[in-house]
Structure formats: structure tokens, C-alpha cells
Image 1 (cartoon, helix red, strand yellow):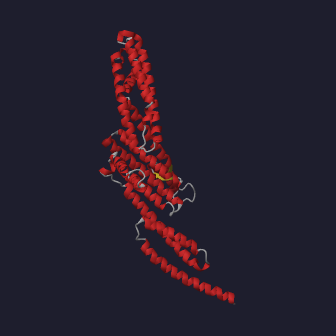
Image 2 (cartoon, helix red, strand yellow):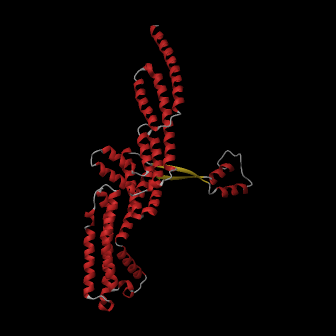
Image 3 (cartoon, one colour):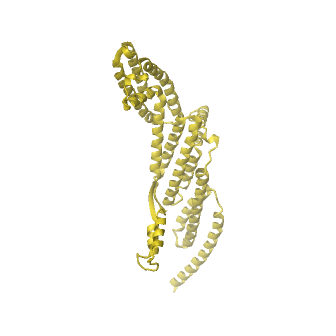
Length: 413
């Protein structure tokens, strides 16, 4: 009798507590759905998770635990909504201002402030300066993802991360096109390489899967299916089998197309493409006269034209090309290394980007040496005296030495 009495009292108490917690939940929910601040919502979820764990330790507070779970779920839903709205506003519909695309000046300003304050005097302030120099859409994506990472379900986070990375990559490519027109192709390439590297690096701690399957309805065959449906005079509309005309119409007229979306792979592809563009553009910029010579010789060879009859392979022309290339290479190389130092802090990263450029230049030198060897056999008939041959060979050796030693000029930012 005493045991049943205790159970009855406990049931009454739990009923009263459930009623009280339900009123509490409704009151809290009304205020919760009005919140727009991500930080506040994240704090609510974090604090209430701890309170729920504490409430689950006792039978007396089971009702409170259920109410807290409801508040957490509502807070997460509101958080997801606010995060998506922020991403739409700050990334998807982002309209860049002139100061947002003022590269490399934004990076140079941050560097000058760092020098003015002194190394290590204020590490936090220096880090904030670096952070502020990032392109705004990427900064917004990383800020939002870092806030919601531990307070929403993993699958929800991966979905938000996938969409935001896609939108951010698109914004970076558009920003690169504006910088191309404003500051030149090398700055545009380095801007894209820098930000894609940062995006990849900052996403790696999340250890998330950015792959999904998208399904879309395909109506491309719908007109044929409708024509066939109308032409069939013996169609069975009410047949309870697979021969039903309406079922056949839907089966033949509508199909589901599946496509795999992998944002991490797309990010890697975009980074690889940006690096390749930088390598090609830098290669062309550093030895433009020599590259034009090699391309013209290759074009003549492909067209089966006698190379020795071409104006560009005459001795004085080749000497002028080699002199011009040697004169331009070092100043251009200095400019490129300085520009790289502005965008890329790590010397190892700079070296990785320059190695393929050096290889391509050395390959172009070998091609030029081969073509020159073919035409110089004619001797003095087309101006290729021994002294000219020696001069051209010496110029090529000088250029090769300078090219091979160009990696040592890399400097940290």
C-alpha cells in the first residue's frame, strides 16, 4: 500500500511538473523564435545541452529534460535558419565594393601595420589584421561554420558546409575576374590561389564529408509520352496493372536524373586550375620574347615550312631576342617573387608554385637551342658566323644559370 501510494504521488508530481515545464517551454519558445544572433543561439544550445545532461541524472527531473530537449531543437532550427539567411546575404548575394577588391593594397596595408607595431608585440591584433584582409564572402563562410560546428547535427552541418563552400568558390572566382581587370593577371591568379588554399586549410579541422547526390526530374521525353498517350485509342485508364495508361505516361514521360556533387573535389579542382593558370601566365611573362620565338618556330615546323627561310631565325634577330630575354628576366622575376611574397606567407608554397615555371623555362630553352642548331648549320649564308653562335650560346647559358638560381630569391612575407 505504501509503495502504491508513493507511485501515485510520484505520478501526480510528474504530471504537475510536466504541466509546469510545458508552460515554461511555450514561454521560452516565443522569445527564441525572435532571436537572430548566431552567437546567442549557439550559447543557448551549448548551455542547455549541459542542463539536459544534468536533468537526465534523476527521475524527478525527467519532465524538465523533455522540455529542455524541445527548446534545444527549436534553438537549433532557428540557428540553421539564421545561418542560411546569413550565408545567402553575405555570400550568395554578395556584391563586392571597390575596397573589397582592392588587392594587393589590402594585403600591403596589413603588412605595413604589422611592421609598424613590431613583430610579436600584439599577436592577436596581427592575426585580426590577417583575418580582415581575407575576401569578405570567405571570411563569412568560415566564421559561420566555426560557430555552428558543435551545436547542430553533423548531417545538417555537412549540408550547410557543402552549399557554402560552393557559393564561396564561385564568389572567389568572380572576385578574381574583377582583380584581373583592375590589377593584372598575376594578381588575379595569386588572389585565387591564396584564398582557395586558406579555405581548404580552414575546412580540414572539421573533417566533414562534402559529397551528396542531387536528384532532378527530367521532362525532356514528356512531349513524346503525351503524344503516344493521346494516339493510343485503346488506352486503359483504370486498369490495376502496369499496363495502366496513366502509369505508362508517367513512367515514359518523367525520369529522375541523379548527379553527384562533391564540393571538396570541386575545391581541389579550382585550386589546381588556379595554380596551373599562375604557372602558365608567369612562364609567359618571364620569357615572352623567347617564348614567341619558340612558338613561331614550332608553327613553321608543323606547317612544313623551311625554317631557314623564316625571318625570325636570322642571326641578328636571334641575338636580339636572347639579349632582350636576358635583360627582362631578372626584373620580371623580382616582381613576381615580390608579388608572391605579398599573397603567400609560406616560402615553401612559393617554391612549389615556381618549380614548374622553372622547368617550363628550361624546356623552352632546350627547344630554342634545338631550333637554333638546325638553322645555324647554314653558316655565314644567313649571318650565323662562329662569333654569333658563341654569343648566342653564351647568352643561353647565362639565362639558364639565372633561371636555375631564381628559387633562392624567394622571401617570406
